[in-house]
Length: 136
Image (cartoon, rainbow, N blue to C red; front, side, top):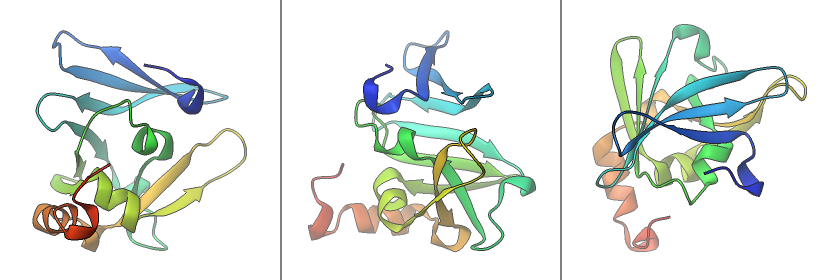
């Protein structure tokens, strides 16, 4: 599922038909950034540690290309951060997050959402509002 707009992202099949490892290809390295489960509404699952928090905004980031690629189907984002699950929707993340790029060409663009903006009820309310009834 690699296309021209998302050269950095590749989905690698696992033993489960609906689950894919998300591989990020950067200039200097390739790494796995989480999993996508496309069953049902779909979800992106990842883990973050304290070193991943953007202290300036007290937020966590997700790869920009993954979030904007409409060919990768998922609604929910679940981040396991220091033993706590932070849940929100892709649409909420895209509309409320801030874009940051760190370093030089070796780092990818990410969207960061403050920890206090996460919450499944907040995301459901936003996704189901009249303004965004169509989703992504």
